[in-house]
Image 1 (cartoon, rainbow, N blue to C red):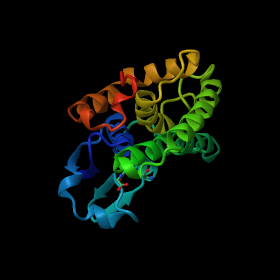
Image 2 (image 1 turned 135 degrees about the vertical axis):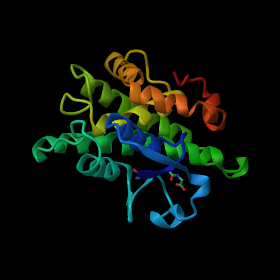
Image 3 (image 1 turned 180 degrees about the horizontal axis):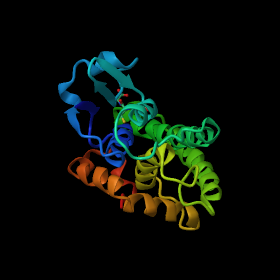
Image 4 (image 1 turned 180 degrees about the vertical axis):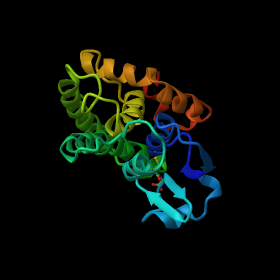
Length: 215
Ligand SMILES: N[C@@H](CCC(=O)N[C@@H](CS)C(=O)NCC(=O)O)C(=O)O
């Protein structure tokens, strides 16, 4: 059975868990606290890490591609046609880089001692997210899923990114297509499951007091 090392509240762990649930792959969940080896598995000790026999796979998107190839019987989350896969990887990158990692800047800043916080970060993050939300609202207009008109890799990335970003920096109500997409994601059983499994850790979200609401 494969093992997944991560934390139930971690956004990138969600990406891998959503894929495991979508593909019906049995797995053993290994809490990051108990996993000294994870510190060496990725360049800076980041998670998730998937372990399959003697093979360790890092990077959430690579884990999802690995699962497509080796585990589960559902349709692949990255299209087998490389021409179609371009769109899936593009949107995976958009959600990771322009939402999740942007929000991470704010999380890291909030975790610093108060006198070490950078006072410019909040406005910079808000400005970057405003642009990304507007771009994504246009992208999602007329679409059900983020790429290839089928649930896949990009939606695995979108779910945690939109969940946490909206919690801290609410998506404007005027972005109807993006808000509807977020609601569609939260209604999906694999995603509702990771959201539920993470509930016990909600109080640890350092941006929880900013007025947004997670669901
Ligand atoms: N590019 C990586 C990012 C992984 C990542 O940033 N993981 C976070 C948890 S959500 C982490 O390990 N944070 C702890 C740290 O950076 O030390 C992926 O897609 O898996």
